[in-house]
Length: 83
Image (tube, rainbow, N blue to C red; front, side, top):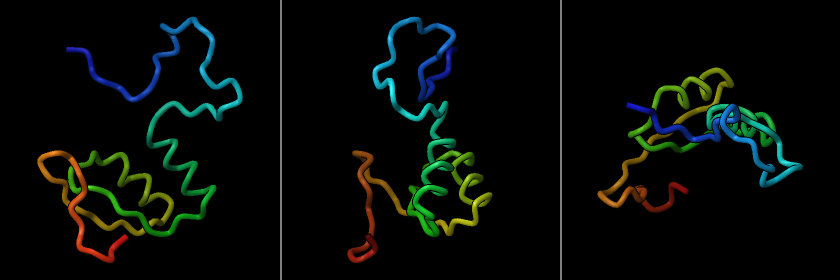
């Protein structure tokens, strides 16, 4: 079974890039690491249903993590005043 990834498989892509001037990051965890450094993020809210790679990035950069649930429509369920 082929995995579902969150990035374009560059070895199979031969067209023009959609955003020529974009910062080229190859996966979500690298995007998160970039944003943590760029915005000096110290605390982040993430859903409980999440892979460890995101948590590992947060731990690596010393970001405090809070969790929230999601409903059957994958929408966040958080107590009022938390965001």
